[in-house]
Image 1 (cartoon, rainbow, N blue to C red):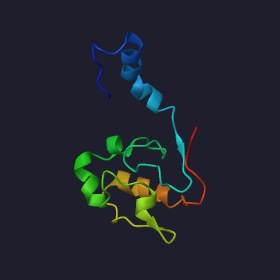
Image 2: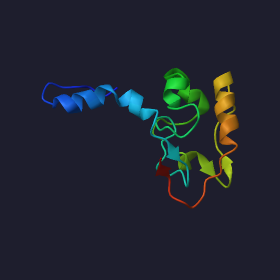
Image 3: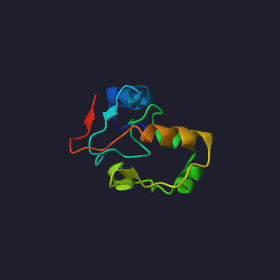
Length: 108
């Protein structure tokens, strides 16, 4: 959660405090995947993957924290290590339903 500060207005601090609630309403429609951050954006039915797959396990998937979907997709396939947990299996199963396109990613 972003940090509130006394120098910020009351409204800004209120918005920062409710950012987790707002996050669940902001979803990304995946197009080319160039602006969709794998770990941080709300692009899958699992929400923010960093919250679902513990940070200690991110390296077991071989996906850098700064990676976008386009970074781990090439020639029509996802370039990730085999799953090592049930949640990783679920995420990878969902990913098999996605195909990156030439269209822009968009928020809805």
